Length: 130
Length: 207
Image 1: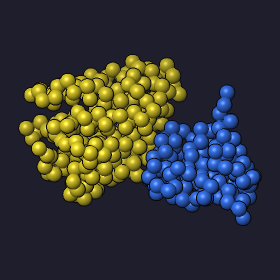
Image 2: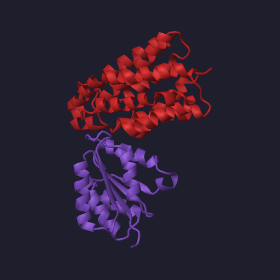
Image 3: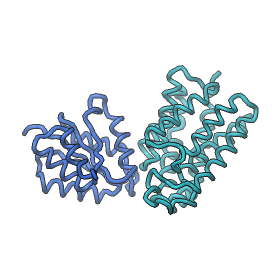
Image 4: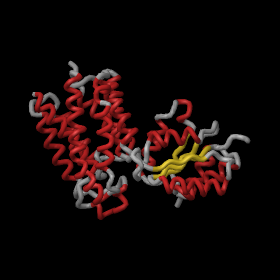
């Protein structure tokens, strides 16, 4: 199996994160590594930097990882998580400005075709263009 | 000059305890214009800091600030984690680069405030914690070395937090409400004020 960009889904809700990952897997099967996390460190609604770091490492690919997020704190915490990765990995992770469900499905579909990280991000972010 | 570790420890403890005591108020403010988790998130972060307080205060001051920042980042669970985390991480970073407390307080505080602004891609006037932190920074600069510095910082912080009420939020979850965010004090501004007031009170008690 050739390397494909990994996908990470970060929601305030673990149910949304898991459901989104289910939809992605239905589209792309096991061709693309998908990891997800949701909930704050106590398990309530929110996001958790350690869990995001774990998810990025779980979805790790030499081609990089695209992170899809829902609301503000998920984005801020994901950016923080990227900065806390080991230096060699930091530049290979992008947080996409895209709707979480559609963005994750589009990004994973693009990744499955062997696209670069920049291409995967661009396809996801087309969904946010006016 | 330097800050004795016992002084540092007592100020961190006072600030964390004051935030924990204010958690119901912060949650109530956040329920009005946000997602209602600011109090519980800050409480969780401050409890984690208190849990590590001995280890934190055993570090050199720059590392101690960085440990506080990292602890908040890893435990808060909302946007306030990276925001306050970046504040303390940047303060620690400034102290690692030839800045010293208390003499460079305004410089160190300025680096910390800049980090919050960069992390949140936000500026003063957008109904956020910056609407307290930036005026406090200005007072720290203007009144540096003055005998009434602490009193002026306290007044600045209290007045600044009230000025967030008529503002319309353009950042964060409150921005979804548009004009309906007007009339409510910003919860992040309030938690920043609580922290500033707690540190000032601790310093007054030691003066």
